Length: 128
Image 1 (cartoon, rainbow, N blue to C red):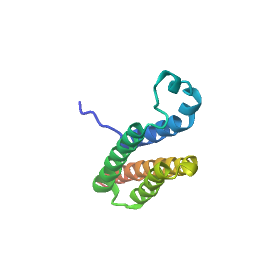
Image 2: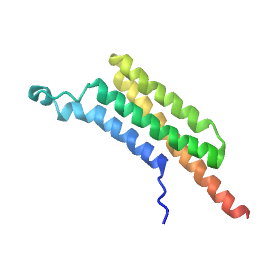
Image 3: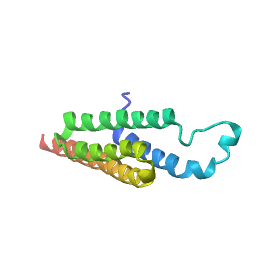
């Protein structure tokens, strides 16, 4: 039995998890600095999450591109979203605007990649 990972589903989940982290964590965990713990604006944690999002996204999209559809559209959408994800780190006053744009674009890229991969698999099965 071969285990297949749906990288697009994982990318969507990571994007949503990132959005939840950035939007809810500051509200729920405002008492952590009193305890000496700072995860809300911890640069190491933020860059680690961005790195994981990039690895998952690049893996999913490059796999879809090379094995299924040869469309650069999902990669372009992901790149735009990822650019906003990076910008949010450098322009704090616009952090939440950039985050919203990043999540929307990254989820859209994964969803579109999933759809055209699925369409490609379906058309390949019925061609033979």
